[in-house]
Image (cartoon, rainbow, N blue to C red; front, side, top):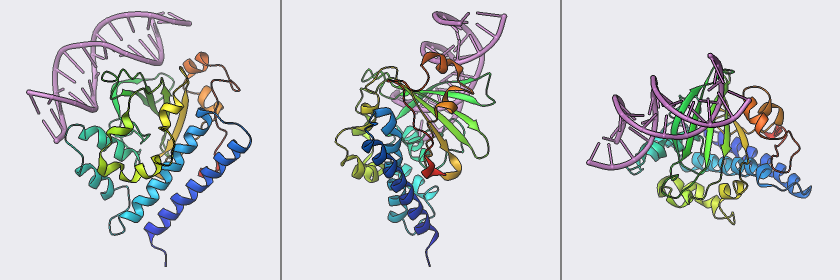
Length: 249
DNA sequence: GTTATTTGACCGGT
DNA sequence: ACCGGTCAAATAAC
């Protein structure tokens, strides 16, 4: 009989596999761009990390509870809040603004929150924790766009020039580094080498795993007319969105 | 004491 | 005037 944890681990692996297949198709078709491949890469990494977390802690309740607390308890005091935020971001987006920051490999500091007229939910503004230290101008916005299931839209702006990957706590990053090591270079810096490039990622908390849907229609239409006016509609050389990633359905 | 978050104020664009 | 993005003082957490 397959345990619940094994089942979840398998499910995560299958998601990662599906995403890898999508990436393969993109590569085969020559549709290589940091924007188009980035969400897939992140999802693959997150899926495998999630699967590993299940396997590493077979005696613990599923990932979304004790494992994250475990990680948090080992984190240094200096940025415990922030690292906890990153840790929880992997597992549960159904929180308030304080914890709904998905693990994208970087640490973010919240600097604002606004009620958006076209949306019932507030939009949260984050900038890279190392914005001052390393003159990193990367920012992101996170906004809840659906209630049930909770779906968050994350919009990344600017480029990372910081070395955020190097500062992760060993305890927490142990499962991530394994994957980072097979990547020739850090992921987000690759993504953000194009100024003003925007990528949106929607995350479904019900899945407890990053659910990426960079659909141009979703992105441009409903709650963000400003960005629709800022960037040309698809297709564009600078802004490219993945069509629906069916592997996550 | 240090750092992160919250939230009202402020500013620029439309 | 309205709206979205950012600033910065106050507050909370550790």
